[in-house]
Length: 192
Image (tube, rainbow, N blue to C red; front, top):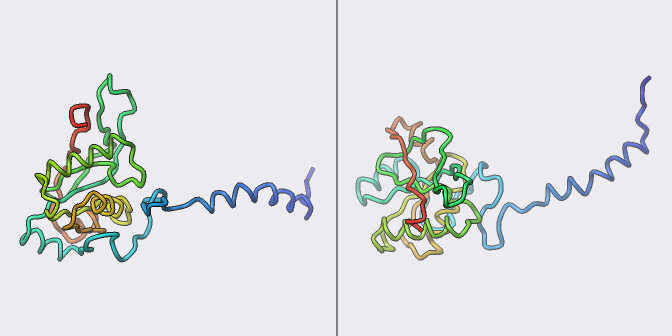
């Protein structure tokens, strides 16, 4: 037995689905304060929210001239157990990043839980030794908004010599430059 869809049935179905479809398509990509909060893997804008955009050649030159602090912000899973069991990162695979980088995972999300925000603030202060004019280069992988968000957040925290390398470790590798295994800075109750 074949069921034939009538125009009326199709229209009723579409009307029932419309609220679901319109809600999904209207979900915001940015928070009210301008951080990307959804679809982190997407084409990036031409300009950073603060500081200067770097291409690979410019980053190579900057590394020679200024010795910037390279900050890898690639996200990874945080073990979901409570602090009683210890807080730890759970990388699903090895992360390869630019030599000399410091890996601060998850600081590029648009909305940071308080302990991750504290982790970022404390590590930036420690790594720069309180020098808010120290050159900071934020990166992740290609087409990842996490580094864009991290630059914006560092600017909001008062850091002034900011750089954004949107090609990230992918662009570095494509240029035939060396990558090394990365290890995330520990997130534990002592660091908070």
